[in-house]
Length: 398
Image (cartoon, rainbow, N blue to C red; front, side, top):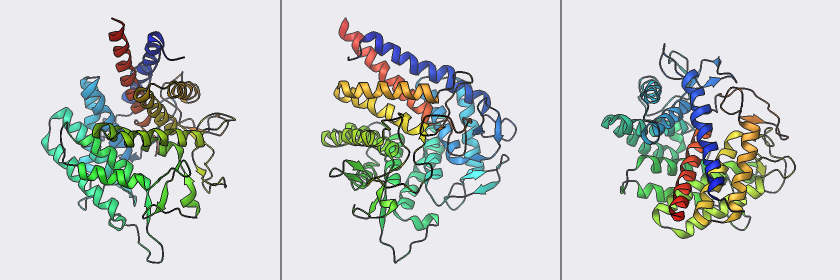
């Protein structure tokens, strides 16, 4: 049945308490490095540091998330203080003079690794943009925007980040750069601003190449003009990534008033969920092959935290957009499965990695690819959407 006011409030309270009572305190207590600056991201189940390496895209994600909370729902100076630790570390240690951002640094801030990808730069930009809103620092706002424009250049020419271009290989298109830059634009622009409309449109057109209605799938890699590729990379489907891309596209399309793209995004969510849901053990597969072959990635059948976080956001957005019972039911099913399997009732925060049956494979809460981002973002957005729905229902009842 459709949620009544009592059920809506219960769902809202569940997300609110999980974020502010159990997830945020875990990172506030264990992440800050008061000696060398920045924040730790490799944290064990109970918050102990198991590696002092600091990964910069996770540093950026934490700064963005802490700043977002401070700017919108939790104006606590302690939250801004943790964001400042990360922002100072990013600007003083992570940025290189050649417009690149390191992938990881030592605890003290010495370089450890670079990637031939754009994601450290992406989250550097988003972090500084949101932190600049909190501190009203125009220099950081300018730096965030300058880096966005640099990222677009990198996305259009991967040789700028060190990726070789082999002339004997046909040009291809990857979904990730388009979707992350679309999200960056959404985060960096101010209300009523049109500065980045052309970039957003370029992203939306790039995403369109990966949407395949005839297959009812969203593909990670296609030819430069959207052609199907008969290779393992060309057949790979990442359901969680496609669902995340869909809600990015929906948010963009709603602001534009583009109803056709909103409907396309709704279909992307359903296609990806239906293809990716494990009907035997529950949960969303990490990778699948569009033709049912065995994916090369050995972790293909694992259940990771972040696809479930993205799917909760997407189905709650879909329910608010359409009011359809099926969307609410899938949101509720995802919520129940995710809280049961990932949330840690003893120490707080969420586990990240499960095998196909839903059993934990790793106990840590923070790692090189898991930090203070997907879980709190999902809890924050779902809490906000449910709060709006509760207020609307209460208003209608008067």
